[in-house]
Image 1: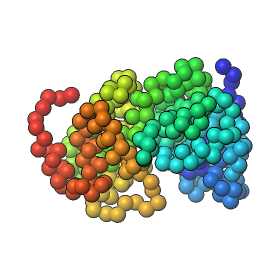
Image 2: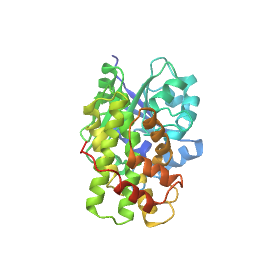
Image 3: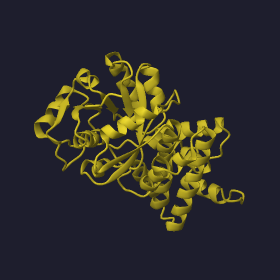
Image 4: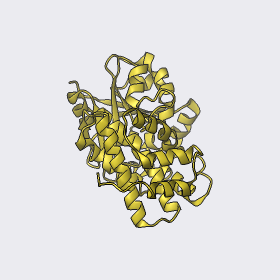
Length: 326
């Protein structure tokens, strides 16, 4: 397989900007594609991004608003929000060469279609080679070069390995996998669990309740992954357990922050998109179709949808029938 020399990142938010830095540290030629030419000019002129304050862009990163320039790179990372992926891919698809690796970097399930991120890529660009980047990592940590380990999944083992080699560095350690469905489920479900954990913190339910909620929620994730054909090692790996641990305890998590606000009875944090809001109802529909019981995730979906109150949801979880661990 030919070496990948150039990388483009589509989406100049905090995560996309951090990933552009990752590719630069890995020694690649890097294109960071912003939503429009004006945004690109501002970022290029200042070498900073207001969405990632205090971080200077590597001099090797070429900031542009031209998606055709991004499409010409050897590897493409799509760092737009999950619900905007189809729009970005529809624009990108006509410009893609056959078998071009396109890596989804947002975690979620698309509203309406119930498709995972790599499925959206495949639907909009059938000749592309979809891949998924997931696992525990926050933009600020990654941008500052703090040690981070993630999972990168592609159906083709040689491709997954080559992508890892192209993006890995001394501080960014990708582990490759061919279990795309496991990585997708882990990344999507943990967003919902992070909201549940935030609610527990915001409601001041205590450390014991938070630990129980997180572990029982993770058990749900594992059951769903198993029902969908995911491998067990993926569920307990970085993109499963690792992502759950980080997202359910770190204030940088938008989903966790949303849960805290809900638990306190406060308005959601302004200007922050929490993917778990969109994922929760779709996740529950998927679980029902697989006959998988997900009480914690169901409670989050009901709270977000206004079907129940937080207090009623907590009571419902506590009064469920006693059962064996598992």
